[in-house]
Image (cartoon, rainbow, N blue to C red; front, side, top):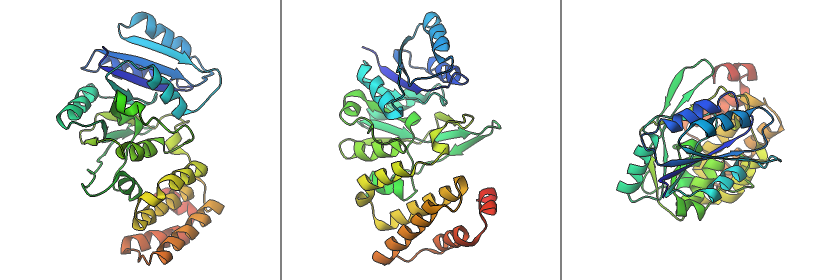
Length: 298
């Protein structure tokens, strides 16, 4: 039996997918299979994968969709084909450090957990590496509180799951952004998730089509419609401040910016929430400081 099935969704990432694959080959755990779901690439991704299939000892299964179906669909496609005891996910512009799978699986086994998420590095276009230190989720806090409060984060390339547990949940194929947050919230309602505090993943921001660098307001509203009632109103205050900041930085003070401001006001008034000093400062900045300055310094 294969120990780990590595699911790699990709689309037009011929410029960086070899980096991703090499990080899988370099894992200390070798009994793995790689399943690549190409979501209708129009570049030479297939040529690169074919070369790797012919020269690598690790099993590489390559499936190409003729019509793009989205990242959640691609990941689920790969999971349905997986034969491993464990399923792990790796975006095709990211990479793992050599101990990623071994550390994650050890955590699964020693904690008798069903899934792992973890801390990571980010690397920008200039090659600078920054450490992301994710705080451990308090025992009395659910995953929705953890994410909406801004205390924690979950990223797809850090996920390792017991295969049978993941297949009982799967990615929501209607969730076109925040798929990792949505999965973690739903997964924790049925199974045990453990944090990997050791940074074993590098998320690269040298790709122009990285989803986390863009907004999808419909997907955000969909996420809130599913999980907004699962978190405390005070956590939604932090989440709407986060949305306001990102909207300003990426779009400016658009209609959505004003809508988020109105929803923030509605939450605070209806729940009689007083903003903290830091939250008041943020809101003042977002309201009155010129957009060009916020984009430069915030």
